[in-house]
Image (cartoon, rainbow, N blue to C red; front, side, top):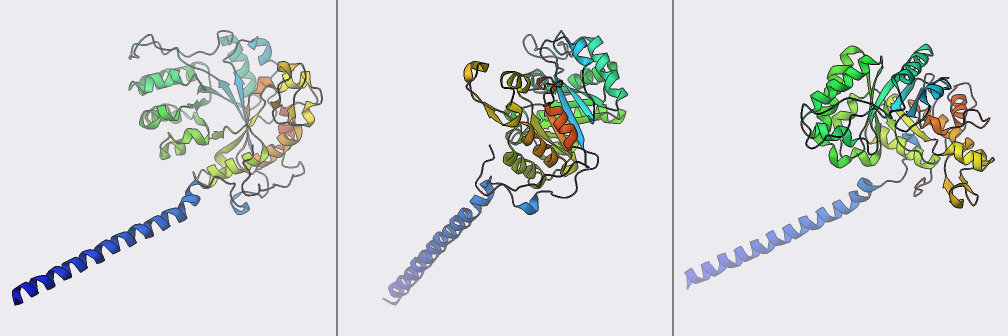
Length: 364
């Protein structure tokens, strides 16, 4: 009986210990759930950051002005090259300079010859490079672009980063360019192969004193390894939106990705501006038009003069401004957006106060 009682006592103790252990396990899970719930909003909060995280001091005395020129489409580029205004422009990115698609799987013997649209001849390229250099503007080949980036992905995904980087380097040397701008926009086609491609470019171009810059966006960053961003000399942030969105986006790159603010340029869009201005002569004064003959009266959202002035002054709190795309502006108009940017990049231009978006605004 004493043995039975002792065994029963031990069983009660074991059961009690199991209950305590189970209770502690449930308690631990409960604490973890509470902790996870508490930090989840902070991890996923996309609201604009607080004012203390947004630069708001004296403007950058030497801001970048990076202009993309869309040489991917047909035009009389020899004539257009002679009209380019390089005032305050620090960098001109020729978009896009790409190899052809492979005929089947890419190999080391595949054609890696780089080119833009056939109408963008070597004569036009030389006129642009010579004129830009005469004004102190650097000229870069922009690689890829939305859709065109597959022409580089096909090579680096096939383990041919060194070979395609050799072709890029040869093009830069042949045409006296100052570097390249990497514009790959498929986060699901980046990762390690993209890193290897960037490293291959850096190892060839940087020892020759050439620049390596990049066009980026938040959605693209999901596919980019952290160390890659540090490789680039300038990071051009493709925002092309309103003021509130631009404030929040630029602060994200500064505070979340820890990019030095002097490397960041704020993307300002000229999308269809010259055509919109031709259809709506007062379009410069607003950011939305519609109801007319242009595109069957479709509502067009863009950035007019006042918004571009604010965006430009905001960009001067960082590295400067980036433009997509120069040929869509009407440089002959008194309401040219390029002229607005040139004026507001001047540190002597009276400053427009930076307004921090209220919490919850999406800035679109």
